[in-house]
Image 1: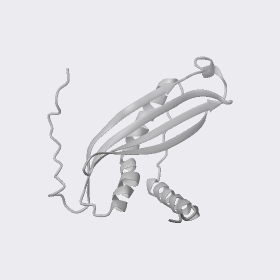
Image 2 (image 1 turned 45 degrees about the horizontal axis):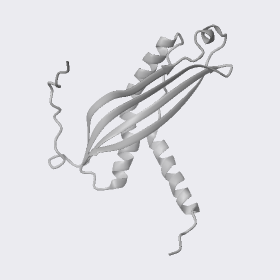
Image 3 (image 1 turned 180 degrees about the horizontal axis):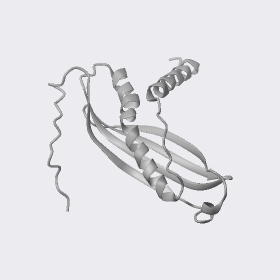
Image 4 (image 1 turned 135 degrees about the vertical axis):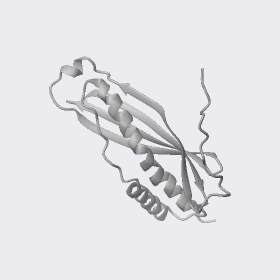
Length: 168
């Protein structure tokens, strides 16, 4: 049996919001998985696991000015080329953006600021899940999403400049 949320979020409408405002409406764990394909044998292999972390983001528009931002984190641990565990978390947040006159600013907020808000929750989920494997928890390091977004923009501009001009 589900009960409605007794607390109504006090989120101003876009019309009465102050200039350039980001409202966090919800944070939630959208998906989480753990695989240990070589257990239990891998648990007795000597050596520390080599950890590989991959991070991605996804942005979905839910309504005018309302977006779901998803941070996907995949942690793969290997010992001597064998997978010890694979943990994947999709941590998401629903954000309302108000009074952003420039679409470039909206994209920057969604691609850099919002994932930074979500990261501590993904970090906690990863640490909790990996802690159940018998290996020490993995603590994700801070990520500079502003730098990653700037790198993405630079790559897109370089690709656009390198693309042959279309003649009409």
